[in-house]
Length: 162
View 1 (cartoon, rainbow, N blue to C red):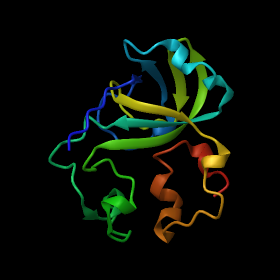
View 2: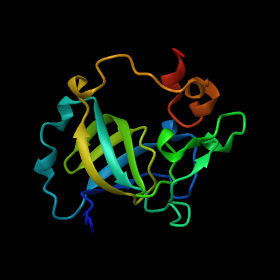
View 3: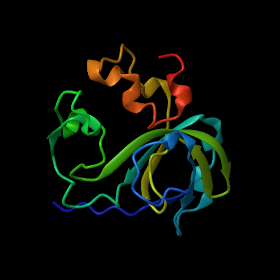
View 4: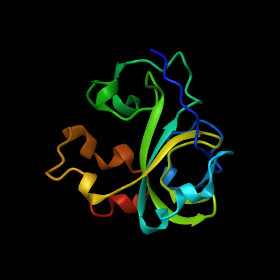
């Protein structure tokens, strides 16, 4: 089965080199691709957060495979499989991030906390709605609660209550 997807937008920001940390400092522009009408974004300003689905085109094809490793290559953490972590080396090279929508300017969305590099193709944008978030308690592996694990990765404001 072949699946063909066309980007609907592209990421524009200062991150042009592979780097895993400090995404919280990055403000990105998501610019609609040619042929996507700006009206496709009408009403999006009513939402504070968006799901951004993107293609991690800069990931080395040789590394884009199922793995069993320590998250962030930290040997103090347990080895877990690709699908039990959020690393970039994934077989289909898909990324999914919830971002904060700062503002819309015509065919451009200004967002925070998007962990995608300059030029990354965006495949879809969906508003975050409480009704689609988990309704019960979210349970996750104990090792993921380590503040140091992600504090350099995301916006430090997310960790003040941890």
